[in-house]
Length: 420
Image 1 (cartoon, rainbow, N blue to C red):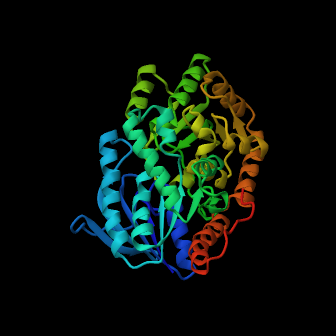
Image 2 (cartoon, rainbow, N blue to C red):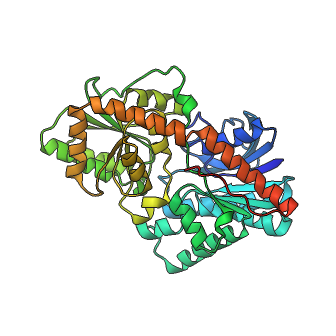
Image 3 (cartoon, rainbow, N blue to C red):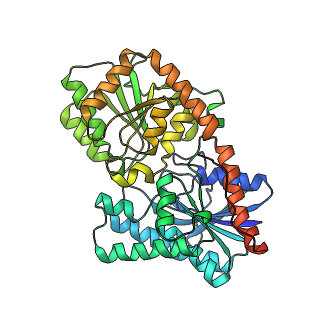
């Protein structure tokens, strides 16, 4: 079977972005299927192609995956208008691929929501099987964050959301709230599957070089955040906690922020203005280097802005990386991730917008590091037993392939087991 896979922000493990699509594509290839991934040029990612762009694209094969990369640079630091134009250009170019290429199943994954557009065209103009994967609920998230306020733009996005869900033969949601959001839009529950982000256990099974940034001593409690420094991540919360630590004259704690994004310059300026010596910024690193950092870290921070839509409507890559690394997790918002952390005793959940509680948790683990060892073991156990990428990839594969086979055979809907 040939799967045409649209993911604008695709990356291999050589990049600093999530690699869910790479792992899923590799799983298809391993089972003898052909995969063509269509993507753009994401600033945090690496597609593995290094040839020159010809007429706005370059094509090649990486680890058995056929890749079509458009010369459409994207960064979280771009302004709203530039990002919107990049999303639309990618969708328009992708329509051409969807209408011309020979394939069996078209698979599209967000974000952005416009990723579903080529799938809609493929479903209705070529009668192809369309599977749509939803990583974030758009436009609910940008609306609640206040990023998009124009009622006309919101109406268009709701229309696109509805058209994508209703055009898809099957949908995949990455969190319980996303699955619920899809069914609220009228999609039958039997046509929606929950396959969350997973843990890349193999990355942490190899021999790694543990390392810390220069400004972090070996005796410091190192709390790390590894991800985009964007508005959605709410990293001012951790700066507030760092200020609280300084106010209390607490030492021996270093907060390390690894990544890039639109808010990073403002965060750096704020740290400088406050004169905080306990916050360290570092550029993005590839997956193997990041794994070495986590090996040396004491706790991973799962941070998001205090937006209700985030509580059950996200499936953060970094959280599953922390679990895979056997790192305890400090989570600062309610929802399904906080419930996993507390129920499995693999970290701490603090209330949102509460720098005093955040700082107190860091002080507590600094002074009681023995408890972190057991929490780290619990985190790794949770990763292995419930979120191993290989197991989730098997379920994802069955769902994608079943969409095609069920339509060919006119069989009923397929329901996966209790994967979460």
